[in-house]
Image (cartoon, rainbow, N blue to C red; front, side, top):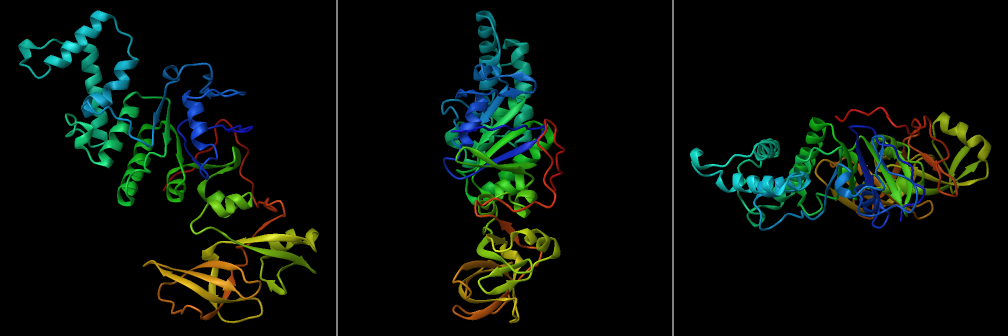
Length: 387
């Protein structure tokens, strides 16, 4: 169920919808596609209200988690299926088009020509070349790999030249290596086509690397909308802080001590001056202090650094991920460390936090402050450039 959602998506934008299972991501996509009807409110594509239109009249194309290919049709005919269905043709024109398809492999003198089918075939050939499917056009789906099937599903949507692409977890059935290459292909195609794209995923990497902006949903409510780095650096609440990022943000129970100090139990934490200014009116209040794993560092023992015991270590090649138990309060935190750092399970270390790394949340879980709040959502937000 989607509750009180207002969202404007710019022409040509790649928006990623992310959230836990059951949060409303796919429901929102189905509402846009016309597969479900909203109980209130309006959906517009451009300036046109579409809530009362049938799916075929909305000029949107949807790519599903399952490839939804017709097993008895070739790749060529799967790509062309939506285009043929959308054409208004008389019975005589349908017969002419069918004869064109049935005689296209015959000598030129025996072929029956259809201008409509010639245009359609050119469009299919262009799409197939862009997706590297031109050598597979005569194969059936059972003869294709998972990645090839997914490209056919994408191509079928592209062939229609819709105003909006709707993609519902299209990569979830692929293995990790294939997901990476297909992810890059989708982003590249979206840049080339400039088609507004709304992409549903639960995958952190897809969310952070594909979209101009991310919309985080939970229990049908929009939690935050912004660029990937806005959400990562300045989450609007604890849910976003712990959902965006892998591993997630560490969250510790802290309180504001005398003199605008941030305290973890009896230990004073090192914070930057702008954060101290935020703490001035909050003396005595209990807060949640969040800090990312890369903003904690193994360091010498000082009265500001946090004593900890190493519970687990994962060496990932380019980094080492430590799980540590803080001796001040028995809380678990995760730390990104150099892979060459020599630590032992059960060993004692001290952790230093970046003074500018702390993010503070009130008892309701909302961020205390954002330094530069993102601009208000408008019909035409400035799109960040994807690197």
